[in-house]
Image: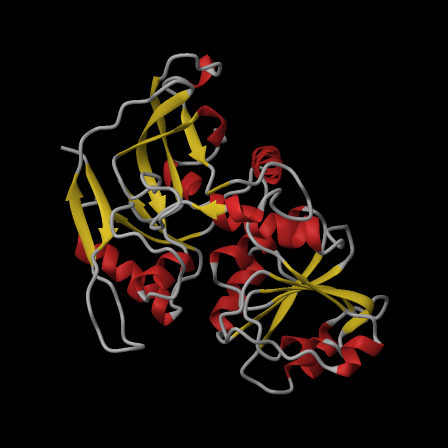
Length: 354
Protein backbone atom coordinates (compact mmCIF):
# COMPACT_ATOMS: atom_id res chain seq x y z
CA UNK A 1 0.00 0.00 0.00
CA UNK A 2 1.40 3.45 -0.93
CA UNK A 3 2.07 6.03 1.78
CA UNK A 4 1.61 9.77 2.07
CA UNK A 5 3.18 11.99 4.73
CA UNK A 6 1.04 14.82 6.10
CA UNK A 7 0.85 16.92 9.25
CA UNK A 8 -1.66 16.08 11.98
CA UNK A 9 -3.67 18.82 13.64
CA UNK A 10 -2.79 19.34 17.27
CA UNK A 11 -3.96 21.95 19.72
CA UNK A 12 -1.24 23.88 21.49
CA UNK A 13 -0.60 27.15 23.28
CA UNK A 14 -0.45 30.25 21.12
CA UNK A 15 2.94 30.62 19.46
CA UNK A 16 3.96 27.05 20.31
CA UNK A 17 2.24 25.09 17.55
CA UNK A 18 4.33 22.37 15.92
CA UNK A 19 2.20 19.91 14.03
CA UNK A 20 3.49 16.32 14.18
CA UNK A 21 4.15 14.30 11.04
CA UNK A 22 1.61 11.62 10.19
CA UNK A 23 2.05 8.65 7.84
CA UNK A 24 -1.09 7.65 5.94
CA UNK A 25 -1.87 4.61 3.80
CA UNK A 26 -3.50 5.73 0.55
CA UNK A 27 -4.67 4.06 -2.69
CA UNK A 28 -2.47 4.22 -5.77
CA UNK A 29 -3.78 7.06 -7.95
CA UNK A 30 -4.85 6.66 -11.58
CA UNK A 31 -3.98 9.27 -14.24
CA UNK A 32 -6.86 10.95 -16.04
CA UNK A 33 -6.91 12.52 -19.51
CA UNK A 34 -3.72 14.45 -20.19
CA UNK A 35 -2.17 13.32 -16.89
CA UNK A 36 0.86 11.21 -15.98
CA UNK A 37 1.48 8.89 -13.06
CA UNK A 38 4.88 9.43 -11.48
CA UNK A 39 6.54 6.99 -9.10
CA UNK A 40 8.40 9.35 -6.80
CA UNK A 41 11.98 8.44 -5.92
CA UNK A 42 13.04 11.48 -3.88
CA UNK A 43 11.53 14.55 -2.22
CA UNK A 44 13.13 17.60 -0.61
CA UNK A 45 12.28 19.94 2.25
CA UNK A 46 11.93 23.71 2.08
CA UNK A 47 11.49 26.31 4.83
CA UNK A 48 7.88 26.45 3.67
CA UNK A 49 7.37 22.97 5.14
CA UNK A 50 8.76 24.07 8.50
CA UNK A 51 6.44 27.10 8.45
CA UNK A 52 3.50 24.76 7.79
CA UNK A 53 4.38 22.68 10.85
CA UNK A 54 4.62 25.89 12.91
CA UNK A 55 1.23 27.13 11.65
CA UNK A 56 2.95 30.09 9.99
CA UNK A 57 1.68 29.44 6.46
CA UNK A 58 -1.76 30.10 4.92
CA UNK A 59 -4.36 27.48 3.95
CA UNK A 60 -2.67 24.54 5.73
CA UNK A 61 -4.15 21.15 4.87
CA UNK A 62 -4.05 18.11 7.14
CA UNK A 63 -4.90 15.81 4.22
CA UNK A 64 -2.57 17.02 1.44
CA UNK A 65 0.88 15.36 1.30
CA UNK A 66 3.75 17.64 2.31
CA UNK A 67 6.61 18.98 0.16
CA UNK A 68 6.66 20.78 -3.17
CA UNK A 69 9.88 19.30 -4.57
CA UNK A 70 10.20 15.86 -6.08
CA UNK A 71 11.76 13.68 -8.74
CA UNK A 72 10.58 10.34 -10.06
CA UNK A 73 9.81 8.18 -13.05
CA UNK A 74 6.74 8.40 -15.28
CA UNK A 75 5.20 4.91 -15.18
CA UNK A 76 1.82 5.50 -16.81
CA UNK A 77 0.22 7.95 -19.25
CA UNK A 78 -3.40 9.01 -19.18
CA UNK A 79 -5.48 9.11 -22.34
CA UNK A 80 -4.67 11.93 -24.73
CA UNK A 81 -1.14 12.56 -23.46
CA UNK A 82 1.11 14.07 -26.10
CA UNK A 83 4.47 13.55 -24.35
CA UNK A 84 4.84 9.87 -25.21
CA UNK A 85 8.64 10.17 -25.01
CA UNK A 86 8.57 10.60 -21.21
CA UNK A 87 7.13 7.17 -20.39
CA UNK A 88 9.60 5.29 -18.15
CA UNK A 89 11.82 8.40 -18.03
CA UNK A 90 12.92 10.41 -14.95
CA UNK A 91 11.23 13.77 -14.48
CA UNK A 92 11.35 16.73 -12.10
CA UNK A 93 8.01 18.13 -10.94
CA UNK A 94 7.09 21.81 -11.01
CA UNK A 95 6.61 23.19 -7.48
CA UNK A 96 3.70 25.59 -8.11
CA UNK A 97 0.55 26.18 -10.12
CA UNK A 98 -1.10 29.20 -11.74
CA UNK A 99 1.78 31.19 -13.26
CA UNK A 100 2.54 30.68 -16.93
CA UNK A 101 4.97 33.26 -18.28
CA UNK A 102 4.36 36.85 -17.13
CA UNK A 103 7.74 38.19 -15.88
CA UNK A 104 6.03 40.66 -13.53
CA UNK A 105 4.11 38.04 -11.56
CA UNK A 106 1.27 35.50 -11.78
CA UNK A 107 -1.31 36.29 -14.43
CA UNK A 108 -4.03 35.93 -11.78
CA UNK A 109 -2.50 36.18 -8.32
CA UNK A 110 -5.55 34.56 -6.69
CA UNK A 111 -4.90 31.38 -8.69
CA UNK A 112 -1.20 31.05 -7.85
CA UNK A 113 -0.07 28.60 -5.17
CA UNK A 114 2.72 26.21 -4.28
CA UNK A 115 1.98 22.52 -4.00
CA UNK A 116 2.40 20.41 -0.87
CA UNK A 117 0.61 20.67 2.48
CA UNK A 118 -1.94 23.32 1.51
CA UNK A 119 -5.62 23.44 0.57
CA UNK A 120 -5.61 24.71 -3.03
CA UNK A 121 -3.94 21.57 -4.41
CA UNK A 122 -5.57 18.73 -2.50
CA UNK A 123 -3.61 15.71 -3.75
CA UNK A 124 -0.47 17.51 -4.89
CA UNK A 125 2.55 17.01 -2.67
CA UNK A 126 5.75 15.04 -3.15
CA UNK A 127 5.76 13.24 0.23
CA UNK A 128 4.06 10.19 -1.24
CA UNK A 129 4.99 7.14 -3.28
CA UNK A 130 2.98 8.09 -6.36
CA UNK A 131 1.61 11.35 -7.72
CA UNK A 132 -0.63 12.24 -10.65
CA UNK A 133 0.01 15.56 -12.38
CA UNK A 134 -0.84 17.09 -15.74
CA UNK A 135 1.80 16.27 -18.34
CA UNK A 136 2.65 19.98 -18.63
CA UNK A 137 3.84 20.03 -15.01
CA UNK A 138 6.98 17.92 -15.44
CA UNK A 139 10.38 18.53 -17.00
CA UNK A 140 12.86 15.82 -18.01
CA UNK A 141 15.43 15.29 -15.27
CA UNK A 142 18.88 16.19 -16.64
CA UNK A 143 20.89 13.03 -17.20
CA UNK A 144 23.76 14.17 -14.95
CA UNK A 145 21.49 14.40 -11.89
CA UNK A 146 20.55 11.63 -9.47
CA UNK A 147 16.91 11.47 -8.28
CA UNK A 148 18.01 13.10 -5.01
CA UNK A 149 19.69 15.98 -6.89
CA UNK A 150 16.67 16.34 -9.14
CA UNK A 151 14.40 16.61 -6.10
CA UNK A 152 16.69 19.22 -4.56
CA UNK A 153 16.24 21.57 -7.49
CA UNK A 154 12.63 22.78 -8.11
CA UNK A 155 11.70 25.42 -5.52
CA UNK A 156 15.21 26.59 -4.67
CA UNK A 157 16.34 26.57 -8.28
CA UNK A 158 13.30 28.49 -9.49
CA UNK A 159 13.45 31.02 -6.64
CA UNK A 160 17.17 31.55 -7.19
CA UNK A 161 16.78 31.92 -10.95
CA UNK A 162 14.07 34.56 -10.63
CA UNK A 163 15.85 36.51 -7.88
CA UNK A 164 19.18 36.60 -9.73
CA UNK A 165 18.40 36.43 -13.43
CA UNK A 166 14.92 37.95 -13.78
CA UNK A 167 14.86 40.48 -10.94
CA UNK A 168 18.39 41.68 -10.19
CA UNK A 169 19.31 42.70 -13.73
CA UNK A 170 22.93 41.96 -12.84
CA UNK A 171 23.40 38.32 -13.79
CA UNK A 172 26.29 39.30 -16.04
CA UNK A 173 30.02 38.57 -16.18
CA UNK A 174 32.09 40.70 -13.81
CA UNK A 175 29.17 42.00 -11.73
CA UNK A 176 29.70 41.94 -7.96
CA UNK A 177 26.84 40.06 -6.30
CA UNK A 178 26.38 39.61 -2.54
CA UNK A 179 24.39 36.60 -1.34
CA UNK A 180 23.28 36.80 2.28
CA UNK A 181 22.97 33.76 4.56
CA UNK A 182 24.87 31.23 2.49
CA UNK A 183 24.04 27.63 3.34
CA UNK A 184 20.34 27.49 2.54
CA UNK A 185 19.13 25.92 -0.68
CA UNK A 186 18.17 29.13 -2.50
CA UNK A 187 21.37 30.96 -1.55
CA UNK A 188 23.49 28.07 -2.78
CA UNK A 189 21.60 27.90 -6.07
CA UNK A 190 22.15 31.64 -6.55
CA UNK A 191 25.85 31.01 -5.90
CA UNK A 192 26.02 28.20 -8.46
CA UNK A 193 24.05 30.12 -11.09
CA UNK A 194 26.05 33.30 -10.49
CA UNK A 195 29.41 31.56 -10.79
CA UNK A 196 28.28 29.82 -13.98
CA UNK A 197 27.23 33.20 -15.41
CA UNK A 198 30.62 34.77 -14.62
CA UNK A 199 29.53 36.96 -11.70
CA UNK A 200 31.90 37.77 -8.84
CA UNK A 201 30.06 36.28 -5.86
CA UNK A 202 30.49 37.35 -2.23
CA UNK A 203 28.58 35.84 0.70
CA UNK A 204 27.62 36.44 4.30
CA UNK A 205 27.15 33.78 6.95
CA UNK A 206 27.21 33.28 10.69
CA UNK A 207 29.73 30.49 10.14
CA UNK A 208 33.27 30.71 8.79
CA UNK A 209 32.98 27.05 7.83
CA UNK A 210 30.07 27.84 5.50
CA UNK A 211 32.00 30.75 3.97
CA UNK A 212 34.94 28.44 3.31
CA UNK A 213 32.63 25.91 1.65
CA UNK A 214 31.12 28.69 -0.48
CA UNK A 215 34.62 29.68 -1.63
CA UNK A 216 35.23 26.08 -2.67
CA UNK A 217 32.12 26.39 -4.85
CA UNK A 218 33.43 29.53 -6.54
CA UNK A 219 32.60 32.46 -4.25
CA UNK A 220 35.29 35.15 -4.17
CA UNK A 221 35.07 35.67 -0.41
CA UNK A 222 32.71 36.24 2.48
CA UNK A 223 32.11 37.94 5.82
CA UNK A 224 30.52 37.02 9.16
CA UNK A 225 27.24 38.92 9.46
CA UNK A 226 27.33 38.65 13.26
CA UNK A 227 30.05 41.32 13.19
CA UNK A 228 28.24 44.64 13.06
CA UNK A 229 30.95 46.22 10.90
CA UNK A 230 30.76 43.51 8.21
CA UNK A 231 30.10 46.08 5.44
CA UNK A 232 33.51 47.66 6.16
CA UNK A 233 35.16 44.24 6.02
CA UNK A 234 33.44 43.41 2.75
CA UNK A 235 34.37 46.77 1.23
CA UNK A 236 38.04 45.86 1.65
CA UNK A 237 37.49 42.59 -0.22
CA UNK A 238 35.98 44.17 -3.34
CA UNK A 239 38.32 44.71 -6.33
CA UNK A 240 39.89 48.12 -6.89
CA UNK A 241 38.54 48.30 -10.42
CA UNK A 242 34.95 47.70 -9.19
CA UNK A 243 34.84 48.66 -5.50
CA UNK A 244 31.07 48.33 -5.07
CA UNK A 245 28.25 45.81 -5.19
CA UNK A 246 25.96 45.69 -8.20
CA UNK A 247 23.26 43.66 -6.44
CA UNK A 248 22.36 41.87 -3.22
CA UNK A 249 20.33 38.64 -3.28
CA UNK A 250 18.76 38.42 0.17
CA UNK A 251 16.58 35.95 2.02
CA UNK A 252 16.85 37.39 5.53
CA UNK A 253 15.43 40.91 5.53
CA UNK A 254 16.15 42.69 8.81
CA UNK A 255 18.71 45.48 8.45
CA UNK A 256 20.05 44.41 5.05
CA UNK A 257 19.04 47.73 3.43
CA UNK A 258 20.83 49.74 6.11
CA UNK A 259 23.94 47.59 5.86
CA UNK A 260 24.11 47.21 2.10
CA UNK A 261 23.35 50.77 1.00
CA UNK A 262 26.93 51.92 1.67
CA UNK A 263 28.26 49.11 -0.53
CA UNK A 264 25.81 49.25 -3.43
CA UNK A 265 26.43 51.35 -6.52
CA UNK A 266 23.92 54.13 -7.29
CA UNK A 267 20.90 52.35 -8.71
CA UNK A 268 22.03 49.04 -7.22
CA UNK A 269 19.44 46.34 -6.58
CA UNK A 270 18.41 44.35 -3.52
CA UNK A 271 16.47 41.30 -4.69
CA UNK A 272 14.63 39.93 -1.64
CA UNK A 273 13.14 36.43 -1.81
CA UNK A 274 12.47 35.97 1.92
CA UNK A 275 12.52 37.62 5.34
CA UNK A 276 13.61 35.03 7.90
CA UNK A 277 14.64 37.78 10.35
CA UNK A 278 11.06 39.07 10.57
CA UNK A 279 8.19 40.30 8.40
CA UNK A 280 9.29 43.96 8.37
CA UNK A 281 12.34 45.52 6.73
CA UNK A 282 13.78 48.98 7.36
CA UNK A 283 13.86 51.32 4.36
CA UNK A 284 16.12 54.29 5.06
CA UNK A 285 16.49 57.66 3.32
CA UNK A 286 20.12 57.01 2.28
CA UNK A 287 18.81 54.20 0.08
CA UNK A 288 16.37 56.62 -1.54
CA UNK A 289 19.08 59.20 -2.15
CA UNK A 290 21.28 56.54 -3.74
CA UNK A 291 18.42 55.34 -5.96
CA UNK A 292 18.66 51.82 -4.57
CA UNK A 293 15.95 49.46 -5.86
CA UNK A 294 14.34 46.95 -3.51
CA UNK A 295 12.60 44.16 -5.44
CA UNK A 296 10.48 41.40 -4.00
CA UNK A 297 10.94 38.00 -5.59
CA UNK A 298 9.06 34.73 -5.09
CA UNK A 299 9.03 31.40 -6.88
CA UNK A 300 8.57 31.96 -10.61
CA UNK A 301 6.66 31.15 -13.75
CA UNK A 302 6.42 27.90 -15.67
CA UNK A 303 8.56 29.54 -18.38
CA UNK A 304 11.25 30.52 -15.87
CA UNK A 305 11.22 26.95 -14.52
CA UNK A 306 11.90 25.58 -18.00
CA UNK A 307 14.66 28.15 -18.58
CA UNK A 308 16.25 27.25 -15.24
CA UNK A 309 16.11 23.53 -15.97
CA UNK A 310 17.69 24.02 -19.39
CA UNK A 311 20.49 26.08 -17.82
CA UNK A 312 21.15 23.35 -15.25
CA UNK A 313 21.27 20.79 -18.05
CA UNK A 314 23.58 22.85 -20.26
CA UNK A 315 26.00 23.83 -17.47
CA UNK A 316 25.87 20.45 -15.71
CA UNK A 317 25.04 22.11 -12.38
CA UNK A 318 24.45 19.79 -9.42
CA UNK A 319 22.45 21.07 -6.42
CA UNK A 320 24.23 20.83 -3.09
CA UNK A 321 22.72 18.23 -0.75
CA UNK A 322 23.34 18.57 2.98
CA UNK A 323 21.84 15.33 4.22
CA UNK A 324 19.65 12.50 2.97
CA UNK A 325 17.49 10.00 4.84
CA UNK A 326 15.99 6.85 3.36
CA UNK A 327 12.34 5.85 3.54
CA UNK A 328 9.12 7.85 3.55
CA UNK A 329 7.98 5.68 6.46
CA UNK A 330 11.02 6.64 8.58
CA UNK A 331 9.14 9.46 10.26
CA UNK A 332 11.65 9.90 13.08
CA UNK A 333 14.52 10.35 10.60
CA UNK A 334 12.48 12.87 8.59
CA UNK A 335 11.78 14.73 11.83
CA UNK A 336 15.55 14.95 12.19
CA UNK A 337 15.77 16.79 8.88
CA UNK A 338 13.31 19.34 10.20
CA UNK A 339 15.47 19.74 13.32
CA UNK A 340 18.48 20.46 11.08
CA UNK A 341 16.47 23.16 9.36
CA UNK A 342 15.23 24.70 12.61
CA UNK A 343 18.80 24.89 13.92
CA UNK A 344 20.24 26.17 10.62
CA UNK A 345 22.70 23.28 10.50
CA UNK A 346 22.29 22.46 6.83
CA UNK A 347 24.58 23.45 3.99
CA UNK A 348 22.41 22.57 1.03
CA UNK A 349 19.19 20.66 0.65
CA UNK A 350 17.62 18.11 3.00
CA UNK A 351 16.33 15.17 0.98
CA UNK A 352 14.29 11.99 1.46
CA UNK A 353 14.97 8.92 -0.66
CA UNK A 354 11.52 7.48 -1.26
